[in-house]
Length: 114
Image (cartoon, rainbow, N blue to C red; front, side, top):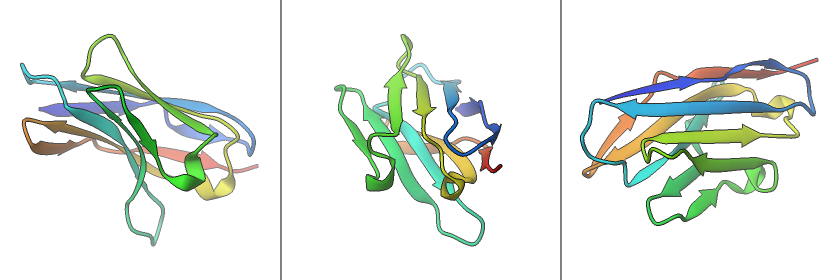
């Protein structure tokens, strides 16, 4: 199983970005997909998750600014990030749980700077 993430880049404070991730190589749908992030010198932290029963969860600092959604394929997930702040700068990692096995994407860098 491979997770391919895209959409990172440089954005000014207050701007928006949309990340995408697709899991391929499995005949099974992911029961959970989501995003984590890791800033330089910090531990990886949860951003948002989307479960196959339609539930979503967010880290407190992302609520109201970030929106996670799933594509028509259950193995595609998006993260719409609005009102970005410099402290949102990090590598964003796509995550998928497929048949009780966790998979990670390669990370896409988001830099929020003026």
